[in-house]
Length: 476
Ligand SMILES: *Cc1c(COP(=O)(O)O)cnc(C)c1O
Image 1: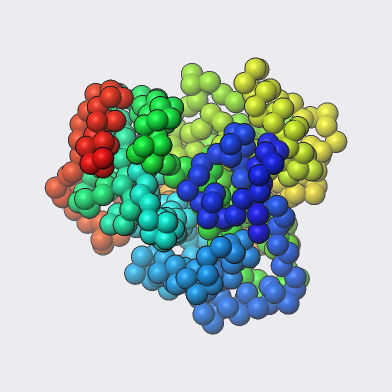
Image 2: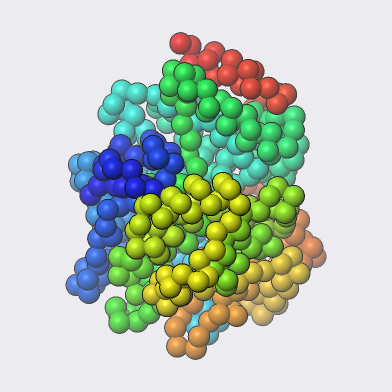
């Protein structure tokens, strides 16, 4: 399997070459040259693998269709090491919970940081350690976070050989629970940097360091953001696991509702559907930051400015543009790299938007690719959390509530709807408290974490100081 860029760059790369890279050289995103097809007999076999051998073996089966430069035995061992009951809390890894007639919740948030990002990031940690070890190289991951991504990255990379993580976050602005999760890590290769400023200051510092190409090369600076193909690929697996749990026969169809921000999660659903998994609809649910909902309703993709990006009670979906969306548009346009480049490099840079409403391809988004969408507001979120608790005794987080709200609007009587749970309520306790008048349950291993010792450096928004820290810790 080779990988190409959505913007037409000519080189075709293998999995391990793009594993440690971010964007393609032309600024595009990597996608496989073609999607391996799952026929009826294969799906029957995968069903058996999941039921009899478990999630890790299912993951190996799917990943091995896309990865041919890691020996099969090694890849199987990496999957087995990643998807364990110890790390993910249950042997099923992603159990399906029945909510009501035709509606299910797929639990993706039982990993170390209680959000679905662990599903991919935990595998990435093991893949990085494996590949860096093979090459005899090191990697310094530099990132900015306001919560979920940074903690998922740290818990995936802690103690991994050849990897250091330098994670900036806005000083004093994360919830006490999030701060405790990150800052209580004592691993020598994890560096928490609390920047006196806001999230944008953190992001600007990361950009400034990455734009210094000499520094970037010398200190092997890398990222783990959501455009990484390996992360997306890891997520494809739980669409298969969800489908297998919701059905008994391959003829049955299932729809998925996905709380969306950067379009990484639902893009993995698109890949699963392109492989032939019988998915009826992919329901994109946004919060007040509705760039994606607007596109699927109107054909206009309009990136928001900072002033128009709302701070909401489902903060992990507060985005101004959806960084993985280009992958879907590339497929939608018949994999025309030149047109994709014209839209994402030229049109977005000039006017901040593009309009496909009059393009015949736009209708395909719904008809041929199964995409529908909807949005949810703070009031909807509170109502959905309350209603789910009152009717089913089930507590859900704010992001999952956005997904469920849109799922209930879009479901059809004859197709089961699986809502992806993207975080546990304890991570967003304040809003759950507002909805229910009580604190969410806390998993036992998180009792009292706010009182643990903290390991964090407080710093001004000073690029030179971050560089000095990295150089000192690398010692070269
Ligand atoms: C990251 C995240 C999302 C959004 O996922 P995308 O892949 O960016 O669309 C939704 N909910 C939670 C809790 C998240 O952490």
